[in-house]
Image 1 (cartoon, rainbow, N blue to C red):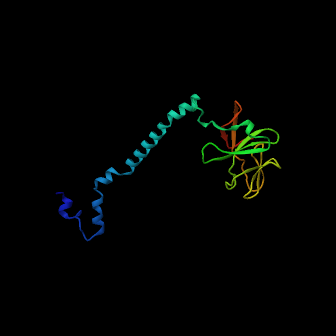
Image 2 (tube, rainbow, N blue to C red):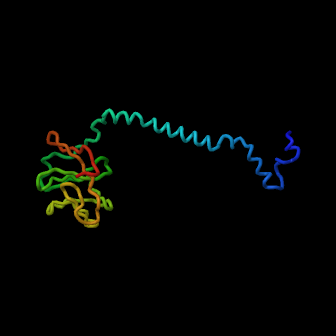
Image 3 (cartoon, rainbow, N blue to C red):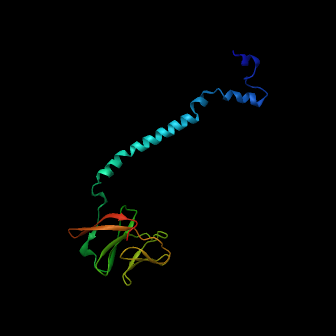
Length: 177
């Protein structure tokens, strides 16, 4: 027994609240779960997460690309005459897209969710434009840039590739000219 215990300074069940709080000072949990232990754990977790991304960074620097998993078949060229459009999904089944064979004979594709409020976008053959009927937003069919209405951003462009008379979606870009 220490001298303090003999004098009754750290007794439990004292009438003084301050004396009762002194029991927490010597708790083992206070030594185990302190600020230094927390910072060590947080720093260790950060280093572990950072090191886990190294293989992906090395692959990117070496130019090792994924196989053609982004390549999705859309249609045959002869199935889409000039002035017509076709709805498909790219890059996932939850992303609606629109393939357009313009009046000038070009093939273009965009994600068909309006950049204003995600309403569906349709091809309007008469004006050779893309229309969002929700708020009368118009997009240029040649580059996806907004022409009229509330949309301020261009439609995400889907890159196309034609191989053996088949149209494939091969990538997507959000900012384009």
